[in-house]
Image 1 (cartoon, rainbow, N blue to C red):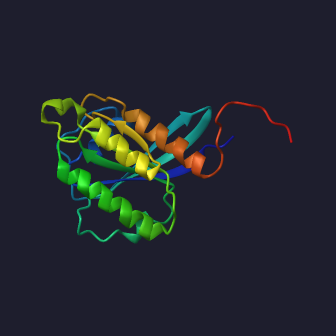
Image 2 (cartoon, helix red, strand yellow):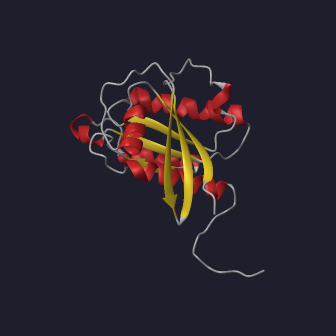
Length: 182
């Protein structure tokens, strides 16, 4: 079976760790100082449930509450990873604004999304509780993870979960491996 091509956009307020998560996943290293003003695309092959994926990650330049949602992020993108930092209430607000704009732009009721609370290594500075993150994701019917790009905590899970959410949205859901011959 040829690999499935999937494109995922990573969005969020600036400095929440979007690039750090992408680079940690793709290259296996933590990069702290990364030019935040540029959009970058990373490619990685990965396998989920025995299916090969050719994954393109569009690491966006960061949004704020005033950003116009760029049209190119609503076309040709299969799923979204919306990132906030658990140490920043502002980034948590912004992620909700991005979500609303995203639904407006795509015109869809449900978009495959993984909500990510990054920077769990800074637990002393935590401002957004796990419960709050979970509650928001539930209200969106989105998947939810907390991660640390720095410690490579749950980073690969983000993208594997995103791929599963995309499959689910496409109706290719393998809840249990039950063979049905029709």
